[in-house]
Structure formats: structure tokens, C-alpha cells
Amino acid sequence: MSENTWLIYGANGYTGRLIAAEAKSRRLSPLLAGRDAAAVEKLSNDLGLASRSFALDDVDEIVRQLAGVTLVLNCAGPFCHTAPLLIEACLRGKTHYLDITGEIDVIELAAALDGRAREAGISVIPAVGFDVVPSDCLAAMLAEKLPTATHLVLAFTASGSVSPGTAKTLLEVLPGGGRARIDGEIRRVPADWKWRTIPFPSGVKEAVTIPWGDVASAYYSTGIRNIETYLAASARLTRQSRWLRRIAWLLRSTTVRRLAQRFVARNITGPTADERAGQRAELWGEVSDAAGNHEAAVLETPDGYTLTVTTALAAVAKVLSGQAPTGFSTPSKAFGKDFVLTLPGTRFL
Image (cartoon, rainbow, N blue to C red; front, side, top):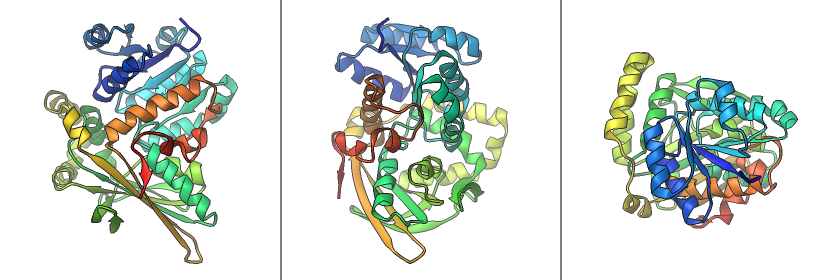
């Protein structure tokens, strides 16, 4: 193996396959890995890339599987199940860890391991996909404009269908209701805690609070102690999310959740290439302070899955080339607040 051997875990998943295929088109050679040996082997043969299969239930075995690997990009969600042992193995084996999570608890876990990551001399950078690169960079830009900010509101648009991994993650987080950062602490709030009108460039839209990753990450990027995150969804996604919230109490049962995840695996395939190509995302952010000062900005990006491919590969390249700090970092802290603007298809409106 070369000094810059890196591995995609969950390469056989929806987003993992997109990243692996794009890496191949750029003449990169990541190792492909995952739990499902048959699926990983098929992808390996299709792309002509090396692979290995292993589960994430034994830290010592994971460390052995990562021997000689410089960096792991974890694309296997729900990340609450895959990140803890994989990060632990990376700490023990001194392997850089990145993932594409948007899960608050995973980001908080990574932050809590900052000291150990520094001692190991590795970078631990969660959420290097659409969750949460554009919103994290937007938050950092706004905080720079208003250093006295005490409140941060972030909102984004979403349309089209979701991947199986995203759907499975929703099944995990829905029973917990909403989350927001209030006076510096992450607190649980009702699922439909707040609604507000957001002036997106494509039109004014109603948006509802959701437990987005910035509730965790934006605090470390900006120091702002009050953070709310909102989603303005399409009519289809709104209907789906309302239906899911109605049955959220059922998902507290492990058995029901497993049955639901099996349904997702069989019936949800994710957006097609044509659907992704026809979609754009808008992100709106606002900061305010105790004196009543406000700053707002809007960022437009490609659809979330397409952007995740480009942000994740850009993050991998920066870490492998030594352009990232050791320890825990958010994307804007690791790569700069302008990181998202260096990627194709992103712009301020």
C-alpha cells in the first residue's frame, strides 16, 4: 500500500457508490469496504478497485482491517451505529477519520474525542457531505460578519426522493423528536417545535425545525450559543415526514424499527442521475445579536447527493495532502469558511 491509501466504508451504499464511481473517474484508487461481502465484491469488480469486507462489531478486528490505511471515509449510515467503533479503531490505528453524517450525536461524539485525536496525530472530521459542509461554511461566514451574534438560524430546501441510508437515519432519529441549541446546550424540543417563513430566492417557503447536524457543528464553528435549523421541503417530502412523525412513537420499538429498515432496504432506491441533475438546493442563514443587529445570506448548491460527492472527495484530498489540522474539526474549521465556494456549482445569491 502507498502512504496515501484510503478506504471508503459503506462503499456499496447509495452515496458510497456515487463517491466510489467519481473517485474512479478521477483515477483515484480507494479501497472499497463494507459489511455486505457480495455487494462490495460486485462493486469492486464493476469499478476495478480493490476491496475488503468486515463488520463493525469488534474494534481489534477493525484495527487489523485498517492496517496500512491512512484515511477512512465512512459512508455507512445510520452513523450512530457505525461511527463509534470505527472512530475508536482509527484512534488506535492512527488513521484519519471522515464521514458524511448529519447526526448530532455523532458530531458530538467526535468533538468529545478531540484530545485523543490530537494525541494520535490524526484528523477526525465528521459531516463532510451536504450534511453539513454548505451550512457550516455559511454559518462561519455569517459569524464573521456579525462577531457579536448570539443567535443563528439556518434553513435549506429539499426536493425529490431520499436514499435508503437517509431514510434509515430518519427512522433512528424520529423517535427522539427535535433538537436545538439553547444557551449553549443541545436540548430536546417537540418534533414540530417552530415554523417560520424563509425568504429563499426561489420564493418564500414555510419551514419547520429539524434536528440537523449544525445544531452541533455550528457551535464549534462559530461559538454562537443559540442555534435553530429548519427544512423547507417539497409537498411530497412534507407529506412523508408528517406521516413518519405520526408513527414516530412506534419506532421506539427496536423490532418495529428493524422491520421498517427492511422495508426501506427493499423499496427505496434513491434519486436517479436525471433527478439529481435537475435539482438545486438553497441554504439561507441569519445571525442576530442582543442589540438587534442582523446579517443574512443565501447559498445555492447542486442537489445534496451530488454535492456530497464533491465535498467528500475534496475533504479527502486535503487531509491526505496534509492540509487539515489534527484533532476534531468541523468542515469550515478544517478547510476554511470559503471551502464550499471552491467546489463546482456553488454560489451566493
